[in-house]
Structures are given as structure tokens and as C-alpha cells.
Image (cartoon, rainbow, N blue to C red; front, side, top):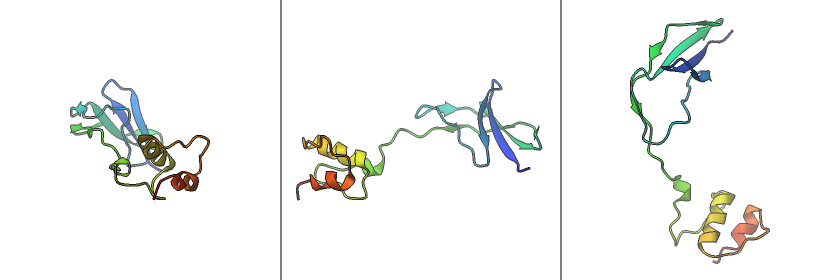
Length: 111
């Protein structure tokens, strides 16, 4: 049986489980987490190792994905998502009602 890992909150509730590397999710941006607020264990044949404190860390600040950072002169391309294209069209007051396909949305963008 393959080893798995678990992360526990300091109150003993399980925060994550699976193969390494694990992620702790659900924390707000710029949250300061102290050493020992979370602990990790290795699980082999349903037996947990001793808990090890996860070092202190601060979550990242919320950042807008680079792909969404189109300035007013940049036009979306096929590399943008449908939602990004729709956002650009909305910002430029271009109606795309009933249009859902990427190529059709891109066709609405003036050259």
C-alpha cells in the first residue's frame, strides 16, 4: 500500500489527505499561520507517524490572473478564455447575447 499524508489543524481536525505534495485550502488571502497551527503525518499501512509541525507561513495576497489583465487597448485572442473574452466585450459595451462559442465571440471584436 502506498504512503499517504495527512495535515491536521491544531485542534485535531483533518485539513487535507493524499499524496505529497498536499495543499491547505480555504484560507483567506494574507492569512498569517503560526508554526504548529497545522501538523503533518505520514500514513503507512493505516499507521500514522508522529505529528510534525508545519512551519509558519503567510498566504499569498489575492492576485488577478495575468490573463485577465487586459488593458483597454489589448484585445482578447484565442489564448483567452470565453469568460475573459465576455468580460472584455462587456467592458466595451459589445452585446454578445446568445453567443457562447469562443470563435463567435472573438468575431465581435472590432479590428
